Image (tube, rainbow, N blue to C red):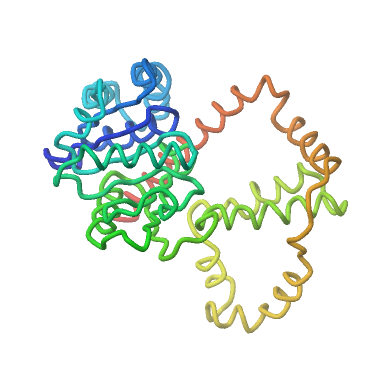
Length: 320
């Protein structure tokens, strides 16, 4: 299970849901993880959640054994203060709340106590670009996808001041611990994943608003249709296989039709309260009442862990 070097010590700042996931990701692959949260008792709470919820989940779904689980937990060390947490680490991942002022303060505090051993500092920011938080040569956004322990994508978004060595180090490290980093060459609102997701979401709302489809059938079009191939290939790989001679042939055959449809998609349209209520009613029919959401989230996480194991086994088979 371990793929890291003995000197790979990771400092995590913020022990909420995302920080917990990072602890699991790094410790599972052999890193020593030093965990700090400024809120009293939060680090201890995070470790208990890992012990009682996340680790047992991974054991149940065959991703680690009980013996490996013991090793993982032994690698996670709770730190009483930030300076101790930053001592001897090679990489820092900040996962404090998504507030620009809170993140600025946290990143500046990190920079004030780190030494030359730190090669890069990643922020788990989901929308705030690094240029608005901290302009340092070692800082960059490293945005994971929820839940990060079963979805490997990480968006790496440097600022104009981030040095190439820090970018390369972060990407290399994330790959070594089993994540799938993508490099975003320029800061754009929403980065990449959310821009793709929001484009689909906007059209989903329009289809319901125009009476074309129910919320349930829109979701089924994705889960039983597009999503079946999207879990192992993206849109460009898909269209390359959907025409005899690849992408250029596909565009020649279908490009004008696609563009004519896209031109009718009005992204200036707002979501009325009636529309939101209609979509919410569909969600309640699919997911149960709001009080049942925690159970449904647990179901989702389990399905994603099963999918992770399947894709991991398939990759191992393909690489033989």
